[in-house]
Structures are given as C-alpha cells and as structure tokens.
Image (cartoon, rainbow, N blue to C red; front, side, top):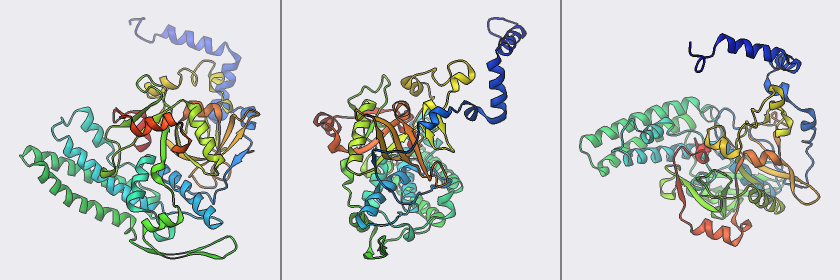
Length: 450
C-alpha cells in the first residue's frame, strides 16, 4: 500500500482518536445523527434577528403555489404583475393563470430547441454543445427576459380562464414525454441533414414536429383561450371590471406595465465577468424572434440600491438566488447567522470558498426566483433584512413569506429585475448600447432557466 496515495489503517486510527478526543465532536455527532445537520447547526440568536418588521413594504394578495413544478420564475413574474392589478382595482386578492404561460413556454422552447439542433447539425453528437442541448431541451426553468418575451407575444389571462391541470401542477410526466419526443425529432433532423437535405427542408420537417408538440401540450394542459369574459369585484364587492378580452388586451388593461423598461441586473464577481458590462448566455431563450437574455453585471450594493428605490415607489422586485444555501426551509429564513455549520463540524465548510470561487467550482448558481416585497433599514438607510414572497404556498415559511438577511443577499442573490430608470445614466448607456459578452451555455448565470 502506498501511504502517500491511499487511506491507510493508521490514517483511520489517527482520525478516530482525534475525533473522540474532543468532547464537542461527540456532542455534534449525537445532535446531527438525531436531528440532521441544519437542525443541529441552527442558531436561535440568528433566528431571532429575522423578526418581520419592515420600513418599506408592499402588500400582496394571497400566497401562490407552484406545486411540483419548476415554474418559480413564472410565479415570481406574475406575482409582480398581480400586485399592480390588486392595487389598481382595490382587490382583496387576484391570481393570473400560470398554466397559460407554461403552455407557450413549452411550445416556444420546443421551437428554440429544434432551431438549435438545425443550427448544430454539423457539430459532433458526442461534443459538449450538442450533448448539452440534448440534456434538458424544455425544462421548467426560465429567466425574466424569457417571461417578458412570452407576455409580449401571448399576453396573460386570469387563473379562471386557464386553470391548473394535473400536468401543470406536476410537470414531470409531461416534461419526460415531450423531452423524449424532441430528442427523437433531433435524431430525425440530424439524419435528414446527413442524407443531404437542406436547412429549408429541415425546417419543413420542423413545422410538422411543432404541430405534434402542440397536440401533446393541449392534451396535457388544455387549449389556451383566444378570448375570455372577466368580472372583477373589489374589496367592497363593487364590479370594477367587466368585459371580453384577448390575452394581450387583458395585459394592457389590468397590468399596463412597460415590459421593455425592466432590465436584469446580475452580481457575479468572477474573473470572466468584470462589473460594469453586459452579458448574455449562448443558446438560452425561448421565443426565437425576440432573442435571448441580457444582463448588466454590477456590485451587490447597486442591486440593493435599485431594489430599494423600486420598493420606495411601492413596487415589488423580482430576484434570482441560490435558495438552498444557509436556509432554514420550514421557518423561511435565509441567513448565514441562523446556521453555524462550521462550528458544528469544527472546521471551514460553509466558509471554505468565497462567492466567486463557489461560482467557478460549481458550488453555487441561481436555483430559484422569488419577489422582494419589503426591507428593514438601519439608521443610515442601509438594508438589514428583506421580506420575500415565495411561491410554495401559505403553509411554507411564515404565511408563505421568507426573510433574507443582507449578508445572505451579498453571497447568494445573483439577479434583480428593476425599472431601468433606477440606473445611473452611465449604467443605462452600457445596458442599452454595449455589445454583450457571450457566456457559455452552461454558465451559472443561465442556470435558473435549466
């Protein structure tokens, strides 16, 4: 046995002796084996600092629930929309259909995927790019820019006009069969190219494939309404809106939001993404004719300043983060001080890498989108704690809300969506005019869409 490369019996004996020589290790073992790591590492003083007391707060309707689906980005987007509708019409609550954008996202992602397959027919099947495209052609995830594209093209509808189905509440089966179909379609397209067919001929094949995708989606989700009747009553039961609308008309009437004014700010301190510049992710998107995604990378403080400015104007803020880091899920607390994992184990685990290193080494990426709806400020007006609306139902966290500490924001919030009026003139000019650096399809800044 080579003692330099193998784990030897002597190594194990030394580790065992060192472990049991420390009383704290034995206490930690008993606690973790009984209740789990996070329960044992929970710090009551850190939890106590997460009292829901706010200096700025927007009041939302009833909690929403994405069920067993990856539609957080849709729910977060629609939760920012519905706040405007509730406020405009003095409603007790209101909910847009989440099945409606899901239908068109799957449809458009299928078209996007097949176009990417046609574009890469000369790439090797075993190469990283084609293998990546085939990995998850139409996953539930997405980005703000992708949702904006859907709304601009298809509008929105109230939940009653296209309610949830078994396949929207739990997308696993639908995604599995649609993915299988699309991989088969990719095979046929590549084989047709090898047989000498032109790109135009491949696109004729794609038209027939998209008809079958439509059939699958209608079977799973129902047919999206072309128009629908609406009756909205306010808190006093007064009829405040009545009529027949198309989805595009309904968005213009009840939301009235200038979608192109809202931009994505990210904060990623890696060497390949200098602050103050714009970025896009290669082959990430859904609506082909509207393009992909566009980000402006800024320091975390600028994301916070813009978010607070939007909250001051009584508007919520869409954001993307790595939700499971330092997270007490049942209590709805995202706070590094509420968990002391390093003290539990007696060495650096949580703190073994900084933010850039976590991104570079695959330890952190965007996994979830939610909505900022409040903030607690210190005497100097700096944020201390943020109020978060999640989309996991009212029984999660505290009536469906989470708290997010400001140090957690620094480490694990990667994106906010705000009106570009909150940017400086220089930042707006960069966002509007700079040619975006193209990031690899598998870059962590595109992970929320996967």
